[in-house]
Image (cartoon, rainbow, N blue to C red; front, side):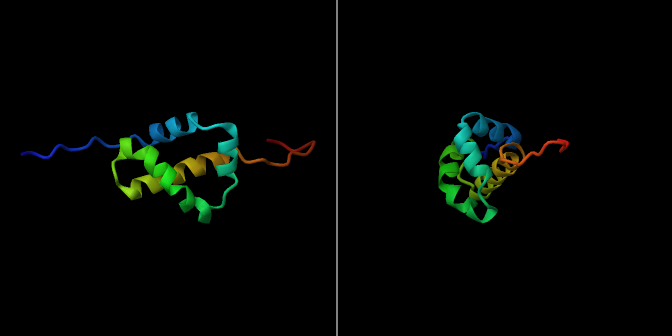
Length: 86
C-alpha cells in the first residue's frame, strides 16, 4: 500500500478563513492578548484546524500565532491624536 502525500497547507488561506468567521469582538479580544496567553486558545484552534491540518499540534500553534500576529496589526486599539500621521 502506497502512502498518499498530503498537499502543503495554504497557511494564509487557513488564517483568512479563521479570521472571516470571527466576530469583531473576538478579533479585538485576541489582538489584545499577550503572547504568553496564546496557549489558552490552543484547544479551540486545534478543533477548528484538525479538519484542514490533521492532528499536528505544531501546525495548530503556527496557525494560531499567525492569526494573533495578523490581529495585532489590524485590530488593536490605538490612541490617535490630532496631527498624528497614520
